[in-house]
Length: 302
Image (cartoon, rainbow, N blue to C red; front, side, top):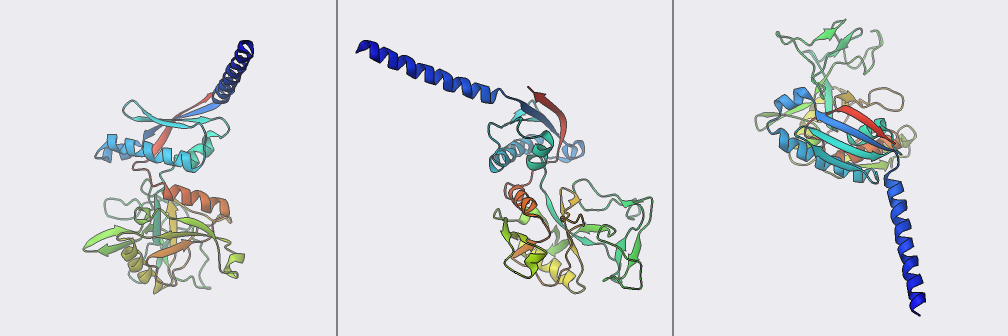
Protein backbone atom coordinates (compact mmCIF):
# COMPACT_ATOMS: atom_id res chain seq x y z
CA UNK A 1 0.00 0.00 0.00
CA UNK A 2 2.85 2.30 0.90
CA UNK A 3 4.62 1.41 -2.35
CA UNK A 4 1.48 2.24 -4.36
CA UNK A 5 1.16 5.60 -2.63
CA UNK A 6 4.84 6.31 -3.33
CA UNK A 7 4.38 5.50 -7.03
CA UNK A 8 1.31 7.72 -7.24
CA UNK A 9 3.16 10.58 -5.53
CA UNK A 10 6.11 10.15 -7.92
CA UNK A 11 3.75 10.18 -10.91
CA UNK A 12 2.05 13.34 -9.66
CA UNK A 13 5.43 14.99 -9.19
CA UNK A 14 6.48 14.04 -12.73
CA UNK A 15 3.23 15.52 -14.10
CA UNK A 16 3.91 18.79 -12.24
CA UNK A 17 7.51 18.87 -13.50
CA UNK A 18 6.38 18.12 -17.06
CA UNK A 19 3.71 20.86 -16.93
CA UNK A 20 6.22 23.35 -15.57
CA UNK A 21 8.69 22.36 -18.27
CA UNK A 22 6.06 22.92 -20.99
CA UNK A 23 5.20 26.30 -19.50
CA UNK A 24 8.88 27.27 -19.42
CA UNK A 25 9.27 26.16 -23.04
CA UNK A 26 6.23 28.23 -24.04
CA UNK A 27 7.42 31.34 -22.20
CA UNK A 28 11.04 30.89 -23.33
CA UNK A 29 10.14 30.79 -27.02
CA UNK A 30 10.91 33.63 -29.44
CA UNK A 31 9.92 37.00 -28.02
CA UNK A 32 9.99 40.64 -29.09
CA UNK A 33 10.96 43.49 -26.82
CA UNK A 34 9.89 47.00 -27.83
CA UNK A 35 11.30 50.03 -26.03
CA UNK A 36 9.26 53.26 -26.19
CA UNK A 37 10.05 56.82 -25.17
CA UNK A 38 8.00 60.05 -25.27
CA UNK A 39 8.28 62.13 -28.43
CA UNK A 40 10.77 64.94 -27.56
CA UNK A 41 8.42 67.76 -28.61
CA UNK A 42 5.54 66.32 -26.60
CA UNK A 43 7.76 65.63 -23.61
CA UNK A 44 8.92 69.26 -23.55
CA UNK A 45 5.30 70.44 -23.35
CA UNK A 46 4.16 67.86 -20.77
CA UNK A 47 3.21 69.28 -17.39
CA UNK A 48 3.77 66.01 -15.49
CA UNK A 49 5.75 63.53 -17.59
CA UNK A 50 5.88 60.96 -14.76
CA UNK A 51 2.11 60.81 -14.44
CA UNK A 52 1.70 60.74 -18.24
CA UNK A 53 3.97 57.69 -18.53
CA UNK A 54 2.17 55.88 -15.70
CA UNK A 55 -1.13 56.52 -17.47
CA UNK A 56 0.35 55.34 -20.80
CA UNK A 57 1.45 52.06 -19.18
CA UNK A 58 -2.08 51.47 -17.83
CA UNK A 59 -3.63 52.09 -21.27
CA UNK A 60 -1.08 49.86 -23.04
CA UNK A 61 -1.91 47.04 -20.60
CA UNK A 62 -5.60 47.47 -21.43
CA UNK A 63 -4.82 47.18 -25.12
CA UNK A 64 -2.70 44.07 -24.60
CA UNK A 65 -5.72 42.45 -22.92
CA UNK A 66 -8.22 43.80 -25.48
CA UNK A 67 -6.22 42.47 -28.43
CA UNK A 68 -5.71 39.13 -26.63
CA UNK A 69 -1.91 39.04 -26.67
CA UNK A 70 -0.98 36.21 -24.25
CA UNK A 71 2.11 36.33 -22.00
CA UNK A 72 2.71 40.00 -22.83
CA UNK A 73 4.07 42.44 -20.27
CA UNK A 74 4.20 46.23 -20.15
CA UNK A 75 6.30 48.08 -17.60
CA UNK A 76 8.23 51.28 -17.01
CA UNK A 77 12.01 51.11 -17.00
CA UNK A 78 13.94 54.05 -15.61
CA UNK A 79 12.48 57.55 -15.78
CA UNK A 80 11.55 57.82 -19.48
CA UNK A 81 11.12 54.39 -21.04
CA UNK A 82 8.30 51.86 -21.40
CA UNK A 83 9.19 48.27 -22.31
CA UNK A 84 6.69 45.96 -23.99
CA UNK A 85 7.61 42.26 -24.00
CA UNK A 86 5.60 40.15 -26.46
CA UNK A 87 5.53 36.56 -27.74
CA UNK A 88 7.21 36.11 -31.12
CA UNK A 89 3.94 35.02 -32.70
CA UNK A 90 3.20 38.69 -33.51
CA UNK A 91 5.49 40.96 -35.52
CA UNK A 92 6.88 44.15 -34.01
CA UNK A 93 5.15 46.24 -36.71
CA UNK A 94 1.76 44.68 -35.99
CA UNK A 95 2.22 45.07 -32.23
CA UNK A 96 3.14 48.75 -32.52
CA UNK A 97 0.19 49.40 -34.83
CA UNK A 98 -2.24 47.68 -32.46
CA UNK A 99 -1.12 48.82 -29.02
CA UNK A 100 1.39 51.63 -29.51
CA UNK A 101 -0.73 54.18 -31.34
CA UNK A 102 -1.72 57.41 -29.66
CA UNK A 103 -5.29 56.75 -30.89
CA UNK A 104 -6.33 60.39 -30.92
CA UNK A 105 -9.36 60.68 -33.18
CA UNK A 106 -9.94 64.08 -34.81
CA UNK A 107 -12.74 65.35 -37.00
CA UNK A 108 -11.37 67.82 -39.52
CA UNK A 109 -13.03 70.30 -41.85
CA UNK A 110 -11.76 71.97 -45.00
CA UNK A 111 -10.05 75.35 -44.72
CA UNK A 112 -12.32 77.98 -46.31
CA UNK A 113 -12.13 81.62 -47.30
CA UNK A 114 -14.83 84.21 -46.57
CA UNK A 115 -16.71 83.26 -49.75
CA UNK A 116 -16.97 79.65 -48.62
CA UNK A 117 -14.48 78.35 -51.19
CA UNK A 118 -12.36 75.35 -50.16
CA UNK A 119 -8.56 75.46 -49.95
CA UNK A 120 -6.72 72.82 -51.98
CA UNK A 121 -3.12 72.14 -52.97
CA UNK A 122 -2.70 70.51 -56.40
CA UNK A 123 1.10 70.32 -56.20
CA UNK A 124 3.32 70.16 -53.15
CA UNK A 125 2.26 69.29 -49.62
CA UNK A 126 0.87 71.05 -46.57
CA UNK A 127 2.80 70.71 -43.32
CA UNK A 128 0.70 69.73 -40.30
CA UNK A 129 1.38 69.91 -36.58
CA UNK A 130 2.51 66.58 -35.02
CA UNK A 131 -0.39 64.23 -34.22
CA UNK A 132 -2.88 66.75 -35.62
CA UNK A 133 -4.66 68.07 -38.71
CA UNK A 134 -3.72 71.62 -37.68
CA UNK A 135 -1.69 73.19 -40.55
CA UNK A 136 1.69 74.71 -39.77
CA UNK A 137 1.66 78.48 -40.28
CA UNK A 138 4.45 81.00 -40.76
CA UNK A 139 4.99 84.19 -38.75
CA UNK A 140 2.34 86.00 -40.79
CA UNK A 141 -0.23 83.25 -40.16
CA UNK A 142 -0.05 81.79 -43.67
CA UNK A 143 -0.30 78.00 -44.09
CA UNK A 144 3.06 76.49 -45.01
CA UNK A 145 3.05 74.61 -48.33
CA UNK A 146 6.16 72.77 -49.49
CA UNK A 147 6.63 72.83 -53.26
CA UNK A 148 3.32 74.43 -54.12
CA UNK A 149 0.68 76.95 -53.16
CA UNK A 150 -2.88 77.09 -51.89
CA UNK A 151 -5.74 77.56 -54.32
CA UNK A 152 -9.35 78.27 -53.32
CA UNK A 153 -12.00 76.50 -55.39
CA UNK A 154 -15.77 76.44 -55.23
CA UNK A 155 -17.64 73.80 -53.26
CA UNK A 156 -19.12 71.51 -54.29
CA UNK A 157 -16.76 70.96 -57.24
CA UNK A 158 -18.07 72.36 -60.50
CA UNK A 159 -17.91 70.38 -63.72
CA UNK A 160 -16.16 73.23 -65.51
CA UNK A 161 -13.20 73.34 -63.06
CA UNK A 162 -10.31 70.86 -62.91
CA UNK A 163 -11.14 67.93 -60.65
CA UNK A 164 -9.64 67.50 -57.20
CA UNK A 165 -9.89 64.87 -54.50
CA UNK A 166 -10.05 64.78 -50.70
CA UNK A 167 -6.26 64.30 -50.75
CA UNK A 168 -5.91 67.79 -52.27
CA UNK A 169 -8.04 69.52 -49.62
CA UNK A 170 -6.29 71.45 -46.85
CA UNK A 171 -7.75 70.31 -43.52
CA UNK A 172 -7.98 71.86 -40.08
CA UNK A 173 -9.55 70.72 -36.76
CA UNK A 174 -13.33 71.11 -36.67
CA UNK A 175 -14.10 73.32 -33.69
CA UNK A 176 -17.06 74.93 -31.94
CA UNK A 177 -17.40 77.76 -29.45
CA UNK A 178 -18.86 76.49 -26.19
CA UNK A 179 -19.31 78.96 -23.31
CA UNK A 180 -16.82 81.33 -24.90
CA UNK A 181 -14.15 78.65 -25.41
CA UNK A 182 -13.11 77.12 -28.73
CA UNK A 183 -13.22 73.32 -28.40
CA UNK A 184 -12.16 70.71 -30.94
CA UNK A 185 -14.42 67.91 -32.11
CA UNK A 186 -12.20 64.95 -31.20
CA UNK A 187 -12.03 61.61 -29.44
CA UNK A 188 -11.60 63.05 -25.96
CA UNK A 189 -15.41 63.44 -25.88
CA UNK A 190 -16.21 59.87 -26.95
CA UNK A 191 -17.96 57.38 -24.69
CA UNK A 192 -16.10 54.09 -24.28
CA UNK A 193 -18.81 52.16 -26.14
CA UNK A 194 -17.65 52.68 -29.73
CA UNK A 195 -18.60 49.59 -31.74
CA UNK A 196 -18.26 48.07 -35.19
CA UNK A 197 -21.69 46.95 -36.41
CA UNK A 198 -23.14 45.62 -39.64
CA UNK A 199 -24.88 48.35 -41.63
CA UNK A 200 -28.65 47.91 -41.10
CA UNK A 201 -29.39 49.90 -44.28
CA UNK A 202 -29.52 47.16 -46.91
CA UNK A 203 -29.08 49.61 -49.80
CA UNK A 204 -26.10 51.50 -48.35
CA UNK A 205 -24.61 48.24 -47.02
CA UNK A 206 -23.67 47.30 -50.58
CA UNK A 207 -21.02 50.06 -50.51
CA UNK A 208 -20.53 50.32 -46.73
CA UNK A 209 -21.14 46.96 -45.06
CA UNK A 210 -19.69 48.11 -41.71
CA UNK A 211 -20.31 51.13 -39.49
CA UNK A 212 -18.17 52.45 -36.66
CA UNK A 213 -20.84 53.75 -34.27
CA UNK A 214 -19.88 56.21 -31.53
CA UNK A 215 -21.56 58.34 -28.87
CA UNK A 216 -20.53 61.70 -27.43
CA UNK A 217 -20.19 62.56 -23.77
CA UNK A 218 -19.84 65.89 -21.95
CA UNK A 219 -19.56 68.82 -24.36
CA UNK A 220 -19.16 66.42 -27.29
CA UNK A 221 -22.82 66.57 -28.29
CA UNK A 222 -22.90 70.39 -28.28
CA UNK A 223 -19.64 70.57 -30.26
CA UNK A 224 -20.83 68.03 -32.81
CA UNK A 225 -24.19 69.77 -33.18
CA UNK A 226 -22.58 73.16 -33.82
CA UNK A 227 -19.97 71.82 -36.26
CA UNK A 228 -22.34 69.66 -38.31
CA UNK A 229 -25.03 72.35 -38.41
CA UNK A 230 -22.48 74.81 -39.83
CA UNK A 231 -21.08 72.38 -42.41
CA UNK A 232 -24.52 71.10 -43.40
CA UNK A 233 -25.42 74.45 -44.97
CA UNK A 234 -23.00 73.78 -47.82
CA UNK A 235 -22.74 69.98 -47.55
CA UNK A 236 -19.06 70.44 -46.71
CA UNK A 237 -16.89 67.37 -46.08
CA UNK A 238 -15.79 66.19 -42.65
CA UNK A 239 -12.65 64.05 -42.58
CA UNK A 240 -11.56 61.72 -39.81
CA UNK A 241 -7.91 61.69 -38.68
CA UNK A 242 -6.21 59.22 -36.35
CA UNK A 243 -2.92 60.26 -34.77
CA UNK A 244 -2.51 63.05 -37.29
CA UNK A 245 -3.07 60.83 -40.33
CA UNK A 246 -6.32 60.73 -42.35
CA UNK A 247 -8.27 57.49 -42.11
CA UNK A 248 -8.65 55.92 -45.53
CA UNK A 249 -11.15 53.42 -46.86
CA UNK A 250 -10.35 50.22 -48.71
CA UNK A 251 -10.09 52.26 -51.93
CA UNK A 252 -7.22 54.26 -50.43
CA UNK A 253 -9.19 57.53 -50.47
CA UNK A 254 -9.54 59.72 -47.38
CA UNK A 255 -12.84 59.09 -45.63
CA UNK A 256 -14.52 62.51 -45.81
CA UNK A 257 -18.30 62.24 -46.21
CA UNK A 258 -20.36 65.35 -46.89
CA UNK A 259 -22.38 66.55 -43.90
CA UNK A 260 -26.08 66.31 -44.79
CA UNK A 261 -27.67 66.39 -41.33
CA UNK A 262 -26.99 67.55 -37.79
CA UNK A 263 -25.21 65.03 -35.55
CA UNK A 264 -25.76 65.42 -31.82
CA UNK A 265 -25.46 62.53 -29.38
CA UNK A 266 -24.51 59.73 -31.77
CA UNK A 267 -22.78 59.35 -35.12
CA UNK A 268 -21.11 56.78 -37.34
CA UNK A 269 -18.13 56.45 -39.67
CA UNK A 270 -18.48 54.50 -42.91
CA UNK A 271 -15.96 53.32 -45.48
CA UNK A 272 -13.90 51.08 -43.18
CA UNK A 273 -13.33 47.37 -43.62
CA UNK A 274 -14.58 44.96 -40.96
CA UNK A 275 -11.07 44.43 -39.57
CA UNK A 276 -10.29 48.16 -39.46
CA UNK A 277 -13.65 48.90 -37.83
CA UNK A 278 -13.07 46.43 -35.00
CA UNK A 279 -9.45 47.50 -34.47
CA UNK A 280 -10.31 51.20 -34.39
CA UNK A 281 -13.18 50.55 -31.96
CA UNK A 282 -10.81 48.72 -29.62
CA UNK A 283 -8.22 51.50 -29.76
CA UNK A 284 -10.79 54.20 -29.04
CA UNK A 285 -12.46 52.28 -26.21
CA UNK A 286 -9.18 51.71 -24.38
CA UNK A 287 -8.47 55.44 -24.43
CA UNK A 288 -5.91 57.67 -26.12
CA UNK A 289 -2.35 57.66 -24.88
CA UNK A 290 -1.74 60.86 -22.88
CA UNK A 291 1.52 61.48 -24.70
CA UNK A 292 2.84 60.40 -28.15
CA UNK A 293 5.46 57.64 -27.93
CA UNK A 294 8.23 56.69 -30.33
CA UNK A 295 10.07 53.38 -30.79
CA UNK A 296 13.73 53.64 -29.80
CA UNK A 297 14.62 49.95 -29.87
CA UNK A 298 13.26 46.60 -31.07
CA UNK A 299 14.99 43.44 -29.84
CA UNK A 300 14.16 39.94 -31.07
CA UNK A 301 14.90 37.32 -28.41
CA UNK A 302 15.31 33.72 -29.59
